[in-house]
Length: 231
Image: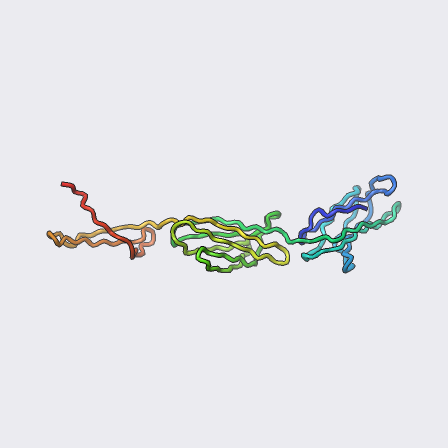
């Protein structure tokens, strides 16, 4: 019996087992194989040769620790059992990844959707904390929903900004961090003017500036009145 570890991540630790005749090298194509954690004596995986002498066995290992494993072939009517030891197998966390999509980049109306998932299977990682760090150093921590999503609506200044998003990991998944560069655009304004007085040296114009989308008042900035009649 010969065995190799093809994957050593949590909940996905997989052992490739091949059984042959020790003398001739001919394939042995029947019999049961068990994977034993020799530190605890527990069986962490099993499989049956069914017409082939090679099998991939997915184990039930769930902890990020170092394992000593024994692969035990039970034998069949023609062959004795045999063992193969796999020592010092370091089981690591599964990879995680953070993806994002930006819905709006105008000042005061920014929307960013963030998704945490397993990059191998595409499975969303749900109920986990995501910490968002904004350019001014403030942070907020949100929990992913059943689709692995969080949505943020940050208040950022106009211009270039960078947001950092961090997942701290858990007993199954590794930590991961990504940055989101974002150019925040100015909001559109709308200007209205009304002639209040048209007498010489007292000509007065009332100017009102609002947000073009919301109608909210714009309360800062200079207003200039230009005489476009050159005559």
